[in-house]
Image 1 (cartoon, rainbow, N blue to C red):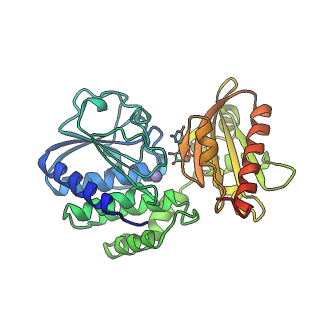
Image 2: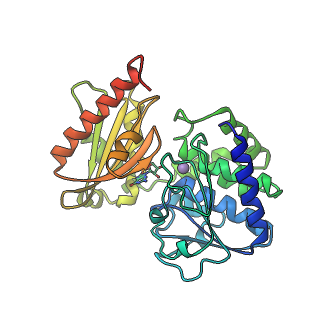
Length: 332
Ligand code: 5GP
Ligand code: MN
């Protein structure tokens, strides 16, 4: 990630506004992921160090495996707030409505994000599409604020990074990413313990659900696009829940020939949430955007309506075109 003069100025302004204010509300996108949780709690611990009052308000609870990390049990799950404090800091969220929390808009909103297409909804907006995780940006802000990198802050910065880079698989991973990870290790984090808590803490139902979903995986004629699908019943029959499907979408990419994946989760009759993943220069964000979704080049999502058969064919075609574009000399 390269830091521009604008980044530096914006970051300094955000630090100034934070110093001047006392009561903070932190938030992120609905169905928070590792980077949402990591960014918010790296920030929360930094603000606590400065003696500030902090509430972390999210529309949905943290993913189960993340609940063991410092501070995470203090999240207030709510879809509205009455008091936005002296400032609202929204991290890892491209649009204020995507917080799913009403009332934030009445506060002084600071927007810190790395999603392409961020709408610039804040009174202060710091956007860096080159950051591998929003928590990398929070790491920089912690330094700007002069707060020492405690083990709690470093743990959360690292959680954001390993989850948002797909454990260093995605092409957004940069030298700076590793530099920040090195600093986090020097601050005392334990990467194997963090990875174990996030990735090796499944219950058996979740593993069975992985098996069931993967055994139903379908490849397109080229063998380069995989489609996965799940509904409530399959999740329940395996002894799992929808939340347990988190992470399945990454697995087909472990096959050498597979370059892109679409994972369909039934949200209602003919109503689907779609997660996509890709390798290298294959751009799934471009597809997500067509469906009112968002994300990043190698990891994006959105929603669509229609029958599974129609949508499967539609997404296969779009993914294959992105693969061909990435492979062509003028592509990417
Ligand atoms: P996932 O597939 O894990 O749900 O999401 C992958 C990436 O796409 C994340 O960065 C996530 O924030 C983003 N994303 C997923 N669904 C949506 C959506 O409906 N809207 C937007 N704006 N981003 C999404
Ligand atoms: Mn992120």
